[in-house]
Every structure is written in C-alpha cells, then in structure tokens.
Length: 198
Image 1 (cartoon, rainbow, N blue to C red):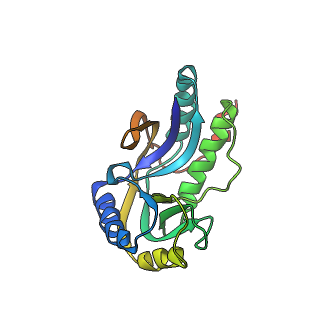
Image 2 (cartoon, helix red, strand yellow):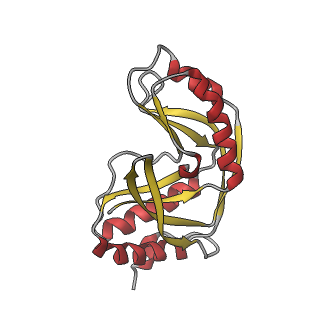
C-alpha cells in the first residue's frame, strides 16, 4: 500500500485555508488544488510498503509518540517548492519556532530507518500542500500566489497525535484513509535513541 505519516488539520484551520485558497483560484492557472478534506501536514512519506511491515511501523511510531508531549503550530503565509519562478508544489506554512515538529519528524525518521524504511534525501520543511501545478504558469504567477497569502493567518494547529494514512488514487483524486493514530502522551521530549539504550 502507499502510505505516509501526517497530522490532520482541525476544522477551523482547514476552513480558513480552504477559504483563502478559494480566492487564490481567481489567479487562474493550471493547478490541481487539494480538496479541503485532504489538507494535512506530511511528516514522513513512506511510499509503497507491504501490509506485512505495518505492525513494525506501528510499534516504532508508538515508541516515538510515547516520548513526545503535545505542542502547537501557527499556520500563516505561503510558499512554493522548489521556488516561485517555476513552482511545482504550493503550500501554506507555519511560524517559528518549529523546533518541536522538526524534532518529532527527526525522531520518526530515525525510528523508521531502524525499521528498514529508507530516509528521504530532502530536508524537512513543515507545510500544508494546497496545490500542485499541472503545466506552464503565467509569468510571475508564483510570486502573486505567495503575495496573496503573505501575512494571512489560518489559526493554531494543536499537535496531540499523528496518523499513519493509506493513500489511494481514486477517480476524483487521492483518498487518504487513516490506518492508525499515535497519541503524544509524555511530558517533555526525548530522542528516540534513548529508547534503544539498555
């Protein structure tokens, strides 16, 4: 199955992002916009995994979650990967400090690596993907997109858990199905390597 680990958005943040993106659509460009119900933060993209590996992934992620306390992120502004000149991915971002979500993601990467899941080469940049380009964009369109979202706040996202999702491509686009939730239930933070010490 095709899978990823991520954090869903609370209704208020999801609706605020969807409302702003509905206005950005007026910029008219070949972009496949994410359905509001699909908006999320991807922490780790796992790609194709066999169902037999799911229990091992679940055990590893429970250890990670048990060593992390809940925290919050503030969604604001937007950007594009790899840049605004020829963007392929359009996103909503988060304000600093991002230390906690980066540490959580790194602990997940370490644990997954120990479970035989290859590490991603690209650096982690927490964001909410809102659209993917599907062709050549008008000149300076990427800059206009970023400017349209500049300084716009979308609310606070409490991170009290993360989820293993299965991703399936359906007639209307991707469908994300939760497989297992992992609740952050420890005060304070610990590196996953501490769990491996005798």
